[in-house]
Length: 364
Length: 161
Image: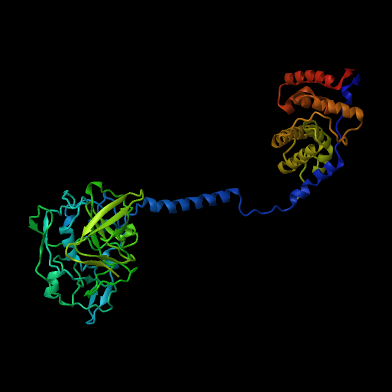
């Protein structure tokens, strides 16, 4: 056995290299430290801000609470889109664009032209198919059940009879290019009977009205009793034709001409069509709508439209104003046209438009 | 700029004066020369960076021992050092064979006895001072010393003289 003595437990000697290294610590500490421009906190903060920005950019369009949005949910029906829309008479409540101070007034965004006589005229958007709209919306509504009368409180068009002055083969092409020097002429009697609406726009400044230069031989005005309870003749009224908050409003042409249907596609649409729900009871909309129109031949005439192209969304119908949309839509008379609105949940809403005895074109 | 003094000593003087103390704590704790050297350097790096004010040499020495123990604990925890039962192969810091054997026996004792035995027998600290440095009660130090001696005898295999 070894002798055990605690005195043998001596201190451990430190190697000289350890001491030398420790002595050099101050010299090593005095060397300038490498400057790190971005420490962890700065990088984390920047990443967080970037993430929030990206997240906001993604979420805001989804939430879409912008009051300037053209399409409003049904809970907020708009009343500003039509100047003389008889169907809006019952909609006294809802969102009012005119009360929104953030939106420009119509007068502020309307262009002004100088006529040859020096007179300054403010251009207001007009619709040369007012009479058509009136006839369409008043007369021809398919309730989505194969033409049967299902009744619709919001539309209430099924008991009307519209007298239409139509030319069976007449086609009216709406030019989209605004003439540099519009000619304001008095509408002829024939054309007035056929196409000029009887409504008056509530504007104080002169409005350039479309004038048809071609004398159109109009037949006697046929009467189209719609459904079974047609009892009264309703004067054509102007539907919602002018979205008041388009940044670049489209104006009605000053010289509409009668021409053949152009075959050129991918041009800008200029006019509006009113669509009624195919099935009112199923009608809901969250304000995020996308639509395309399928013609009578089953062909999709237009590409998918965004919600901004639908000028107004009423409780009972949709005024479709495909401003700045590309494509050509030719709507023939006596045919139904369906418009499908796709929501974000991929549920489609079907609307149907019947043009009656008129051909209608959304061209250019 | 005037050089910082540690209880009246310069940094170099402090290193040379207390190097063996710090080395002993690190070697006893880590039982590896390489790891002990790292902790040794870290202890004096902290001394230079912190530059605390010391009242006396004892205060400075106690501070270094305390920091060395903490550094060894952090080092072992950081690298999850395994328990090494064999005696250290690096004999550079042993004076002779007897010291190495005693040191090896001390390193073989459980950790809770090791610090107390080292401070008591190598650093010649009293029980009260050991209690202050390790922040434990004096009676605990006494108990640890008594049990540590018995363990050390068993490991070393010698007769108590």
